[in-house]
Image 1 (cartoon, rainbow, N blue to C red):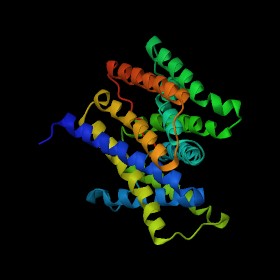
Image 2: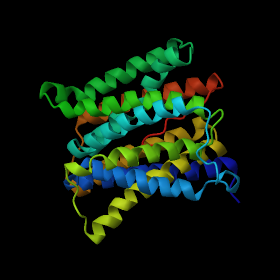
Image 3: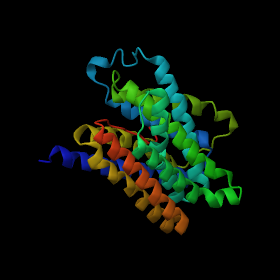
Image 4: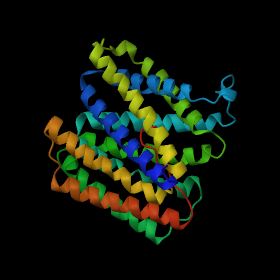
Length: 293
């Protein structure tokens, strides 16, 4: 039998793998309209969450006393999801993943305003290091006026608020309900884009697009399970395996070779995130930043 920490490591590893495969499918699906890709992420994900609703909640699964906060979580989550999908389609995979690691930096800043938390010198230093890393990674984009470098940063901003709202919602709401509402929101928004022209996928493409929702759905469930069984400080470093996967996928599938600037900036961003997480643990807090929930 596995210990709790071993289970936490296993769930985190599976979560990282699932998120990486989801990114891979998003980048592959470039020929399909973004709204159509969002539909598969939302609809298939919603089906997965419906399957895990406890029996006692089947009749009133939708019930919540915090509809307003759910709405804000869905709104900013959609902004983040649209941004990361757009970035994945237009930038090297390793670059997008590297910048996405900066989400905890913005979460730290937002926690001051939304949770009235006090941020000390160590976390402010981490924020500064993280911003330097982002500038190093995105500098080629700014000099060449590549607007797509802005999207991963928008993703980080959106996910920072999502992390704050999930921290508040999780005090009273089950994880599956938070995720279910978001998947339903994605599905509804995606259906509005049908008039813009969806493409009838082949059977093989239909299966691959459906896997997008499967990977996204189970990734967040496994992430939650990881934090349930093990301490955040123990399993969080495994999240940075996503950069390794991104470099491998990008190189062998799209001939993308990460630049020295990308790798240098990624190291600073990762270092910044580790400092923030370690400091949170020392203060006996837990920060759970879910990527594409």
